[in-house]
Image (cartoon, rainbow, N blue to C red; front, side, top):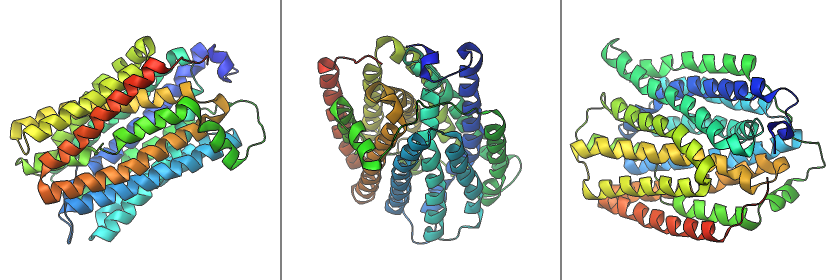
Length: 403
């Protein structure tokens, strides 16, 4: 299928990757803003009155669960409207305007409220944005396109922690001052989105019913794929626990952004190569490599808990896992979904991840606090190994359908 068949009325060589680049720079500025905050936020939250690693897991889990749930709603409505950009703008607007409010946070409830609002903004924008990306390229170039977008996204994720580190050490700001300054790149993201991102047509308008659309998308191998992704996600803790491990290993909170930047650096380096490789050998196979990377980082966490030098290696390998899974997983969904239901399919994909993410982070946080990081890591390793086996079986039995 040609790029023109994807609903592009213009010359794809001139317009298609302009949209990818524009969306990439929106993510670049947003992630620079976000990671200025998130590189300091886990330790900040843990030290709030009445907090701890279990509370951190609860906040992250609840926020991400609601975010992923919102992705179903926004994906469905973007399919119904056949327009994506307006919904994407609302989502980016909410996130970039609420994050600086962490600067006035004094308790766990306030931190959770702001974190939830930020993640709801991400939930609103993500499914329509991914559908917009997928509609800009053909299947044969989709892995590379998502890899490019992910690379630009993660370049911002590298810049953010480094900016936080610089502002604390060189400029002498405290954590709350860094939170306030995150508004600047956030505003740049909104300007870029308004001026440079172009709407794409999403296929012919048709009658759309909510439950019918979900039932139509949620069948066959797509359902099997979601089950496998769900198994893996039940054990997939997020970056917060990698940073918590570094803190327990003796890193001062002012140095934690360097560990976070290291995660994002390896994430960025692997994004385009993993996308290109997935176009060549199959996206499912590369996703298995990502799952294996997570298994390896958890094994190191199991073998070397709170190890000073191991913390660096864990961060690098975790970043490789995150880069592969977040690039290839998103590029894989259109292969299993009808074009007119891609927003819905992305929403269901994110709902599964978010629900399991809630369970994973609460479980890992509780196991970590009660029994230590090796026990938490062993739980994650078991589910990762099982999901690899299941994905291998899916590859062996699936006959790719024509796009």
